[in-house]
Length: 313
Ligand code: UD1
Image (cartoon, rainbow, N blue to C red; front, side, top):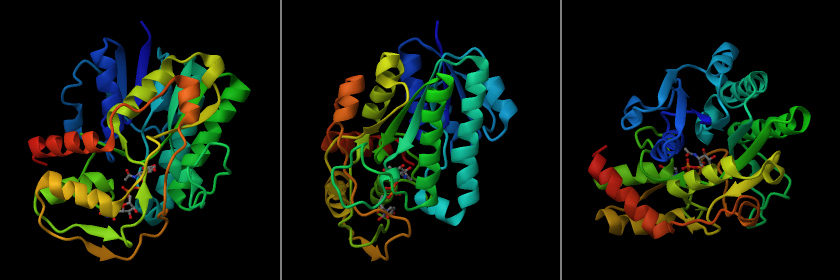
């Protein structure tokens, strides 16, 4: 039976991929250093062989890759402002660790690596929707580091024949996203604060927009990328999103009605490194892996609010 490795397995996206693999009966190993991952995210994943460790150490990568067929590389420092505050750590986590993992994968005979890329690679280009043929234009340390990881993926496919594939995520949201740090994703922060009746802050005028993608579709695309024929995906980079966008002000309105929030947002200056608009062209993922989003924004938000309400975080 093929063995899967999920890095960042105690994080939001990693644990969701691991849960889906376990649910279909696959054999899964997970690794996390708990820098941003949470131990409670491992609840329900008891069938996973879990290792606590840091991919910035090559020996850890070599040991965790042994016997693995396919890797889902989700471990990262995921916050743009956090990368602005500490670019060296962002680079170590997103670039050094990724190169270590690729080299260990090559050395131990791993067949495929599915990598969590980021739409941040496109930066602030005016063109919408963003498509893969556009020149990257990173505007934060986070975006540069994620793009470097992508480039290593392509090089390892080309030079060493590793079947690497990059999914450029656009603002993923849903159950298990950590809402407790000011570096957390906006949906998680808003859901938690609005359910608790706390003040929320919108950075900028709230007219910035994002292509918010529900976690279940991200998991789906990862599974498709893991099983697609090598000649279709090896060395490829593709957007993973919905092909629709919504402003933060609109999100606020929808979440107000779903949570019963009565407050108004406080507006603060935009964050440094923030991009204005984000919208994906998802044709390539449709063509290469047969991806089609299944959960629309309204339904995703409804499920997400229900989850935070039940979790009581
Ligand atoms: C997000 C992801 C990043 C991913 C990228 C892909 C997180 C933490 N970041 O970056 O990993 O690669 O999408 O598109 O998941 N905002 C507020 N109030 C808040 C928090 C945020 O107004 O309390 C604003 C931000 O200034 C920004 C927008 O909401 O304009 C989205 O911010 P955030 O959720 O941090 O995501 P991105 O920076 O888009």
